[in-house]
Amino acid sequence: MDTGKIVIQIILIIGLAVPAIILVLPTKGARGLAIRRLTMLAALVVGIIAVIFPSLANAVANAVGVGRGADLLLYGLIIVFIGYGLSTSAHLRRVDRQISELTRELAIAEARPPAPSSTGVEER
Image 1: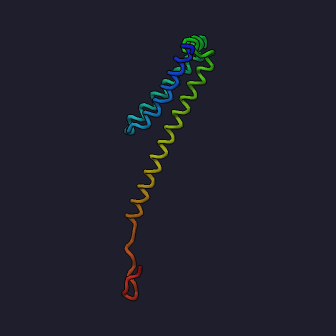
Image 2: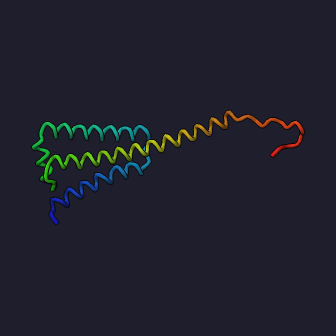
Image 3: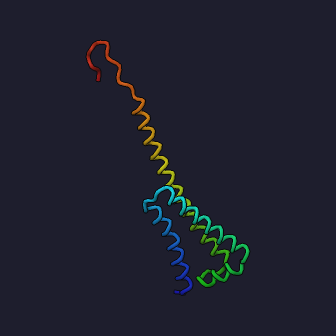
């Protein structure tokens, strides 16, 4: 097997594993938000550098065993997209859980005691 292909495969596997690990680990709101913002900023900087210096993207692609810089950018975009999808899915699950808890608390807080029966016998 070509050693260049092994390098890009390792990079892509790590790139796919890191977002999954981050989602599994418990994070507090500010810490998770900071990680997402730094990741987005890093992806933006890499994109700007690739646009300004396309030959650098080709050189990096050739160094890791990818034919063209555009292919390397596509691989990176796929990793970012999957990470974003996983992050959004986890966030929506947390929001759904919070809404369910708030709905239960509101229902309990607004619950009225049952009205007394006119016959004096408790209904079931």
